[in-house]
Length: 438
Image: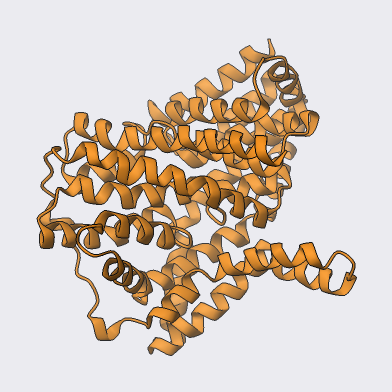
């Protein structure tokens, strides 16, 4: 009965989002209420469960997502992302241009949300295609693989950041492990796989080839790299410092404070406001307008995460999550593989990597506690699974298809297969790290 209940709830969630075209936030709320009724929660307590789930989820996450959106916006609007791209292109040259795009996509993908990074990098990809007369998919897919992997694997992106909070994982350690897994996933799913796609016909639409900023209007190279990667520097630095400050309570407290993801993002946005804003001649009003628009852009993501928190809380309070965890524990599979598999199935059904990751978290959370699975690696296992086989129910699929002007068949052959490759390589990397480290 337990498995039937969760199957009905997830199946209904899938139907509402895909077939019914219902907004995921509304779908989560409806399914959460139905799940509460089916699992025996007193009807007068269901709304309290929803409120608690939403509050608990957003309480630890909304600051990180909002500040991350602000940082990404100023990095994009100031031209810092364009500067990073041009520098990387200069380093790698025409022969290895796709490798340059991979590095560019990965660096830019860390602070930028996927959709922002996608739209931002499209003009660069198409300018390279036109300048060097190269196949568009061969050049563009590696960069977009970098953006996708950063979105699925690395905090402060919404799903990884939410999973870190859900499993009480260390964000700095998760980020370091994420880098170790992301790099081979990008290489295999990006440049290596793209060599098989050179003959795919693609005529990028002129409509999507946006103008870039003039060279004299761009920030310096040092300014661009330093500001865009400041969250990574701070998280890595405080994680390393914490190892050497165990016997010094004062330094340990300071390190813990600065290393808190919310403080990291606040420091980064404050620095970026000056280095990429005021220092580049923007007025404070203009900068704040950028930040306002950035938060509007991610408001629906925040609501979807809130809805996932509501469903998670209903499953926890009903005891269904614990029962499912007990059942999953009996499977002859490592808990990390179970987490990956659950996320992959939901991703294929629902389409959204964020929804897949957050829905899986609510189911797997009790299992993590009961089995003692490493929380940082579980974040990455679920993140890997959440990227599995993007297809027609994923907005990213249609972004790629329409921008590159491809057929459905060629989009599946390129984009969908790339997503599947990085997902499989990701879980292999997680299991290797688990074997070596634990």
